[in-house]
Image 1: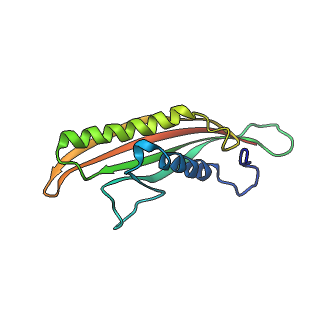
Image 2 (image 1 turned 180 degrees about the vertical axis):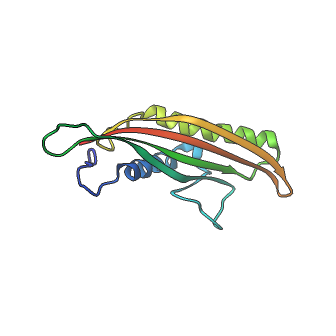
Length: 155
């Protein structure tokens, strides 16, 4: 259908990008067993999950001395949380977390600007990854955070 324009005063490019990111990840074959949610799933937890914990859109730049509508550069970060709760060992949990983090990174490297899907996106790349695994009475539990930084130009 072509790029989705972001020209209305009420358009939120950060949410549009986040929705599209979640859709991309939800279609990734390596993440077929991972539940993908736009927020914390609460009591509806799954053995493997990925959810958005927050969207930090506080980097805005507006040029001065322009006529007409003022364009804006909006850079923001989407923090994705990952949970793996179905592996039998800490090593297997670490390995599965690694696969999920790799799939997220690889998916974005295939479509780094998402420009064909959302007008105004200049880049979208993983800028930070961290993870931890703990042995609990319920078995190994793994958690990871992936930060995806978007750079956009809204006209």
